[in-house]
Length: 220
Ligand code: E4P
Image (tube, rainbow, N blue to C red):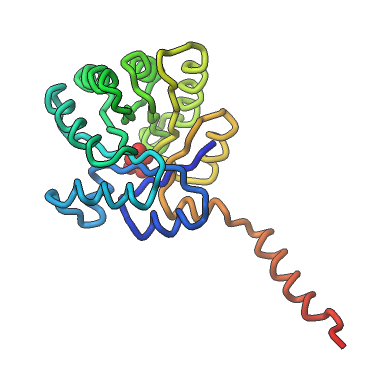
């Protein structure tokens, strides 16, 4: 499983990239608003993210009609070769995905919450599909079970393009563990969760005992 960082924060991207584990970045309008992003600066900001991360960088089209999504998607894709256009899983989103894919523009279909949505996204030409785990949990559904269903269903078929499942709306190490065990291609993870993934109390305890014992090693 690859890790994408789910943020628009440049400092977080630069720091996590230095750990050698970040294969891509996903953004959305909420994440851009959270860093105080300005509308006029959005294209330049996406370019700054692409300069920090050579992997796929998802930038979301906010239009709701196919014409708007296609136009926005083409503008976003022109910003850098590694831009992936994020498109909502709706009828208009499917039509836009088909058109963008035909122009060889990679699409990440987002806000996916069901197997039929995922299969339709794949058939329309999406390179990435993002089932949301945490938000499904939030409505008292089982986000991980839904993710597993999507992974299995997509694996059952062949598509014209390679389809990558991104486990999205990830809130915990448990989500990441289960996503990895079920074979999700990618987990897109917020910075704070990514940091926690490497933490373990037994690692800390072991390190403390090694440090203490090292002081007992005879030096003379
Ligand atoms: C994925 O691409 C989304 O940006 C993200 O995972 C949404 O997560 P949230 O539910 O934490 O907002």
